[in-house]
Image (tube, rainbow, N blue to C red; front, side, top):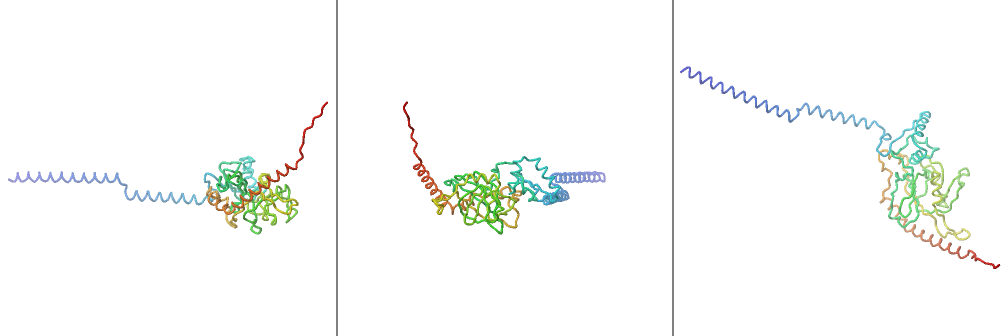
Length: 345
């Protein structure tokens, strides 16, 4: 009896032991499975902290770089040191790296001529240099509202630039230096009056104005070649680089006066001057370092600017064509008629 009871106890004990071992294995297996699929809390925290640290370090590095030195793929900044020797060294390298035409282009984008290159502490430099400047035009390449306008010159005060349109297509643009804050250039629609290859300023006879085209006779406003210092500095006139002044001098049509010159028969090339300069703020072209489209004037904005003037521009253009045709016809009538004569031998 005791033997039978002992055997049964051993049997039940063995079964219970096997059951415990089985449960432990399943628990270990389940834990291992969870460990493989999901990282521990400590690992997640460590990874998150690492990401935060990297992100902060990246931000610090990015913010520590001056905006003027950040490249955006289109423009970069060239800092010019204040120390004269260092500046000379930088410009020497600048002259080696870029051709004369490329240097001219870079300075033009910064509203500078070669004499005023040291006026800037930073130069905006395009990654790819287009010596025609057309790749960097702030003006729309096409304006449908001007499709019937044969010639038009526009000057933007905000970005210190001029543009030339022919039947709605932009054919040229470049830098300018307009009136200083104390002698602002008048804005609005004007027309080219007279022009002179070398005019003398009425303000000071020491001011020589090559390739001068007058656009407001009573105020003495005109465009001409003169120093471009990198900001609006003129006595209300529209300063240009020499090459641009020469080109616009040939391009512009002057007024047509009645015999004796006392009265006007027809106006010359229309000129629209608009906007105002952001006095005391960052130079507009410096913004290109952060945004390559910062100076762009949209088609919609230009259309709104031109719309109030279109009727007058087209009317004056039509009148000029009629006057010119009548003058040509009158000259043809007045010209002596030459007849060939033959003599016999």
